[in-house]
Structure formats: C-alpha cells, structure tokens
Length: 399
Ligand code: NDP
Image: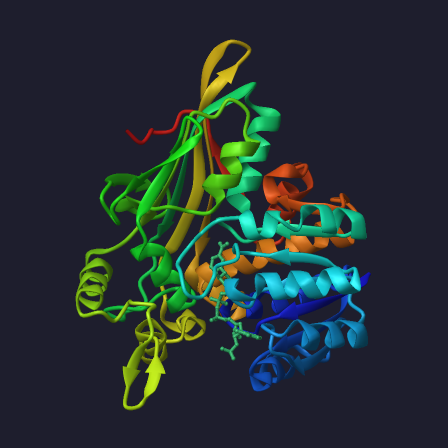
C-alpha cells in the first residue's frame, strides 16, 4: 500500500488514474497534479469515493522548486510522470532532492530541438544510485512493453537475439480527417523527424517515411507501415545480447500522411518561433490548439491496435523466430476507462511500472530502462490489468 503522485492530467494520465483506482491494494492514496487543476479535479470527481483516496494540486512541472514543495507536502512513495517529455529532467531533479522514485513514459526532449535521446536522463544514474532511489525510464507501450517483450524473449527463448522489428499498428478510426492519438505536438515532432534504425552498433538515418512496408496484423488486417526513429532503439541496442539490427515501424493511413505533408509544406509543423501580431508563437503549438484533443477521441474511435516485436536469433545453436504482441480494442477501452486504446496502452504499463517499484518486485537504485529489469512479473501484470499478449513462433517476417 502506498502513495503515488501522478503528474499530468491528459489522455494518458486519465488511464493511469483509473488503473491506480482499480488497483487500490497497491495505490491506496494518489495525488493528481498538473498545470490545469480543473482537469485534475474533473478526474477526482469522476473517480473519487472509492477505496483509493484522491487529492489534487496545481503544479508547474517545469519548476523544480514547486515540485519539491508539492512532494514534501504530499510525501509520495513514487512519482509517475505523465506530463510531457519537456518536464522529465525538472521532475527527476525534484525526485532526487526529495529521495522519491520516478517513472515516466517518454524520454526527455529539449523543447527547441526534436531530439530523442536518453543521454540527458542517463546522466542521472550515479546520483539516483547514491540517493538509493529508482528511475524507471519509458514505462508506456513503446517505449515500455516493447522493452519488456525484448527482455522476456531474451530470458526465455533466445541465447542471442540478432534482429528485432517493433511493429506499432493503430487500426483505429476516429472519423476526423486528421487528428493525433496522443499529444499532437509530441506526436508530430516524432513522425516528422528523420527515420533511423540501429545496425551493427550505430544508427543509420533515413528521410522521414522513406522506408515503407506492408504487414497483415492480427485483429486489424493489412496496413502500410513506415520506418521511424524511436527512442527505445538506443537502449535496446545496448541491452540486448547479440543484436545486429533493430527497426521500428508505425502504421499511417493515406489521409494522415497527406494532411501531414501539407501541414509541413506550409510550415505549420515547425518548432521555430515566429512573430505573429506582435508576439512570438510556435507554429506546431498553434496547430495543437486547433486539432482535436486526443483525450476526447475515445468516444468516436473504433477498431484495434496491435503492437509487438518480432525477434530472430538463436537458441541452442538453432535459428529461431518469435513474435509477441498485444491487440487492444478502442471501444473496449472506452467502455472501461473512457479513453481510446493509445492512451490505454500507455497508461496501463505506467501504472504497472510504478507498481513493480512500489511492491519491491523491481528494487534497484539508479536509472534504468525497462528491459533491464526481470520481465516476468510485468508480463503477468499485463495479462491481469488489461493488456494480454499473444505469442507466435512462426510469424511472417518483415523484409
Ligand atoms: P496530453 O497533452 O493529453 O497531457 C499532458 C498533460 O501534461 C496535460 O494535462 C498538461 O497540462 C500537462 N502538462 C504539460 N506541461 C505541464 C507542466 N509544465 N506542468 C504540469 N503539467 C503539465 O498528453 P498525453 O496524455 O497524450 O501524453 C502524456 C505523455 O505520454 C507524453 O509524454 C507522451 O509522449 C507519452 N506517451 C508515451 C507513449 C508510449 O507508448 N511510451 C505513447 C503515447 C504517449 P494542460 O492540461 O494544462 O495542458
């Protein structure tokens, strides 16, 4: 039994709050703290009155002193960061100062450059170790469950894994010509960046959407998918034994890509500030303000997601392939927690990661990526908390 401070009150945070309340044996007290307190209060109004005690607070998570004051007042056992990647370091600083463990779902990004690297957070390793607290990096689905899948494959099925393809398919339809399934600013920064894959110890860069494949996904059907850079490639490249190549593919529909291209061409996806009527605005932040809020997509999204990893490697000297994945239904998620599957598949693992640390199942001081821990209790928890996984030992491979 313990106390969790949940920072952020958006699409993913809403799922984390629901799941913590369902898991009141572990989370008997939570505080939801975010920039807009009314969103925290709305979650409390919806879910309060159950076994988990809920309080709310306003906090600017860019401000470490404000965070320290809140942590000292609330005294959580863990901080779950489901605000934005820009806040990772200020929240880690506050956790260090107050000696409280930390979990997030996305690597730190400097606001003025779209960089997806762990170097800033890995620089905290020694300080977290000395403070005797844990930072669990990337406990969403990808990064997150994909890393747990890799650790599980490595532990149970392979002596060495040579190739990993991470396939992220969202077969959902929200009926809008263009909308993003999680924070639009973060999503568009990610998909409009150059692609890259990890091969023989280094990243090979590609143009955005340069590499395309088609795959027939269980529960969804055939979809076009495109190679993207994704942050977990960096840590998996180091943590998986014998790895030669890791690629990450995400599916996109024609309408999404056509709109994105057009928005890029007119400069709306730029993160460089421009002068507008006497003040500076960032085009991408303005675009975010006019796009549908991902937290509102749940009610109108139908279809399924399918996210997983295909492995190729060796066991007892013989070649082996293995595919492990989760299929998640948007409507079912909405029925359960009022959110679409992209928020759901991120929020459930964030709750599970926090649970692993709070219950002492994962107990190592320092800063770790998720694949560095024992995957077994996390895999069991996925089946229990709404993200059951399937295995296939003879999958169709991606060329
Ligand atoms: P939303 O935009 O819906 O929510 C973000 C929340 O953070 C909002 O409540 C926002 O407040 C709050 N926030 C932003 N800045 C601050 C600040 N300075 N201080 C306090 N609160 C702040 O985003 P999502 O819920 O879609 O995404 C949350 C996180 O999950 C992101 O980091 C995203 O990258 C990550 N993610 C990870 C995935 C994975 O699989 N690993 C997949 C999808 C998302 P306000 O309401 O005032 O704007």
